[in-house]
Length: 287
Length: 330
Image 1 (cartoon, rainbow over the protein chains, first blue to last red):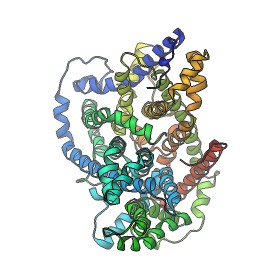
Image 2: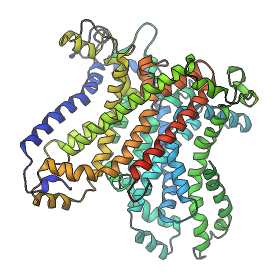
Image 3: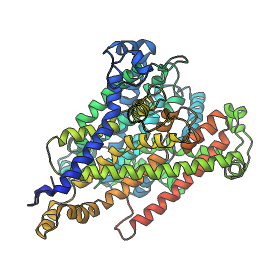
Image 4: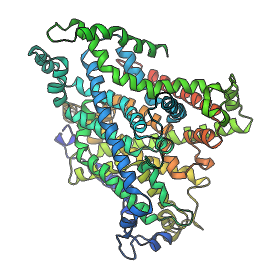
């Protein structure tokens, strides 16, 4: 750790007090919505339809039971899981190949490739939403491969969303893996792919995990394309969660319970793996 | 766009010798020429299919009179030249006027949001560079807003901003008596601030994460040398920490800018399909222009204009911030 604390001087009082005040306020700002989500998910309906209450009038787990029947949450959950996991796996594999090529080889068009791929990050999603929709429909009509409305189409879309950032981050990370390692493997008779899988990939695990976390979160949280490109059977959580508001009632306690349920897998995974994320970013993206 | 085509043609040309030389013992030269392209091929094809081809289609569509009558077979829609663009930038007519308004709202919102996210993220990272009790827990906690799926986070804020049963009005009106009557947060002028608060709440941890990673690359000798010279902690932060973060900030601010400017998810979940005028971000505005009014030609023209604007801004930004530095490369 390179931190100022390694200096012989203790931090001045002004620093300690600013830190205390700043971090306390920030913690409040971050925590209040989390508290609202958790506490409201345990409230009876009357508590969330009347005036806001900091403390529930009584605790109930009813919302957690009702969420599964008010909307087909389990189905949405499975859809989201299939789509996000597939998109993540494919995205990571494709990104590793591409980043390996850029990091280890010199070839014509290298710079063009990286710049083109990165610049797609700039595209407003709205620009290619409709063309993509038309393209998928046309491909479907021409070849019979159903992309529009299917999970496959969504997987394909999401995996390219995380691809540019993943490739860019992995290039940086692979650059930090010593070339001697894979060159030694090449001399030992491994092919380039052998060197990649046996030497480079294991050495780059933190970077790869970071990229996977990013890809999963991107897919799990996307709303725009999910709302246009899914139908009743393929609907994902991002769209499905809107089903808790009916014309007459908004079941806020159920909405909060469902939000919590869909957040737990990503937040838990993210927090468990955040160490890797920081390491991956340190060696990769910000280098 | 010419650059893209070169990149696409090259693999096809060089691949075949690569594939032919791909068996076993042959010394690497030929293989090495083809292999990188082969490795890039999946990424290239995917980017082509999902990003580049649709973008070209989008540009073509912007020159067509593409209303609902032609949507089933969009190729047959009549060409309309620059009509869609003329409608979009005719700022005296309702369509252009609304687009311009939405553009200004988005610029203002983006500048404020990016500025605040960067400021909070940097301050938090710098304050937490030093080890203290509870630092690990706090760090995990601070990342929660970023880790939460957008819709789950934003829908919680929707609940908090409710007029009758929300937390915000309860605190401001019932507990602190700051307002005469409960305010509306998700419609009217307040909606801009509601959107800004949610956006900053969700966005700052990303800045925090990146700056935190950037801080780890600052060699500790710099601090030690400064301390020997008698620089206090505040001075060390000003003279060493912040200047060392410049390359990280260059990328961070650009990425935050692009993400915030193009953000669709936050306003869409916060306000639903039609955003209030005060918070009419450009993505939602174009979405509405396309899908609510079924006028895809105009929507595409607006998207192309938006892309051109972002290209120019990014280009100018990179040239401007890279001046005097080793490379403009990312």
